[in-house]
Length: 390
Image 1 (cartoon, helix red, strand yellow):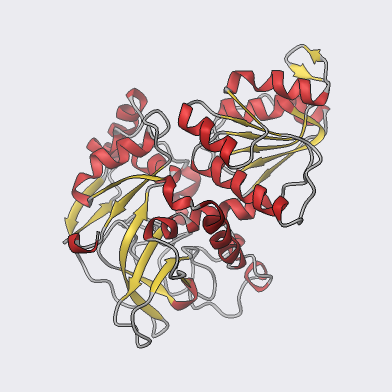
Image 2 (tube, rainbow, N blue to C red):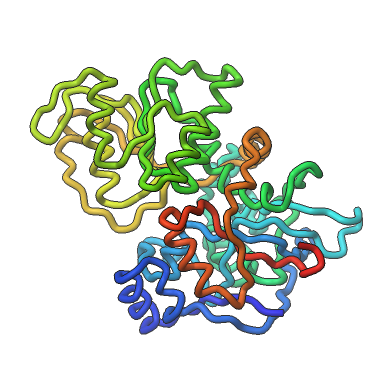
């Protein structure tokens, strides 16, 4: 029995950053993540329960953290040491209602933190915008998996408030369940989809899940598709899945301006198109991807940042000149999880979990997740299930 613990060790942060500059994911071998014995956490209040994780995903924010490339913006919003892992399907330990398999809503909002009255965002149901992430009876942490008091999914036990639990339908596998949380992020992003000409940058986990959520919205008649969806993908498996999940055009990143120009009947003006896509959804979050989003978005169009950005550098003159809107898209509400379950079921999205690892194999697991597209994989997860349960 063991857990992966992330500690505040500045020299190891620096070493991880150097290692990851050579190959993404290599920071795990030299950074401040270590395999340690289990430690049982206290339950903060009677509303909390113990969870025994089955599967726990590795996401882009986890990789940025381990590689030492995460933005310093998050420093006041985490507490050390902590156990990572917020994409979690788990069993409730000693639940009075019997065996219960749940997905975690990791956001540590006002009610979860025992704060009354709740902030305006939580009162409106927008727990993703909670203003009290560093207050209440918990140490700072935007989410479980970044808070020392809650633990995280990269372990054999963590704790969670009952409001954070969503029951997993019996017809979904553990692999289906572990992608419900990132799919909830995608559902939240898909609410911004207007039906007009749209470009999705990136066909990793978030790009593909956002595309799937958009397709389900269109199938249900919630939005009318009046323009094509163009998706950029670097690798063959990404291209195949993007077409399967509803893309009209799938192209390499450097081919995107040509496809957008054709669809919007634009002219080329220097490095800029005279027209462009009405909406651009950036699921990559690098300086290059955000800059490309600004190049291909239409005047008065919208750029939605779904992929967690690091420290980006931008030429922003076109933002002013073309009255473009850049808007972040972070996390979800509880209602997004019910819709996420429908999207996962519609496309059997558990099949995106292409590799699982034991905790002791964390060096290999994180290196695989950081290079998933190149290796023909979408989602990588830690498998905490007993061997006889596999």
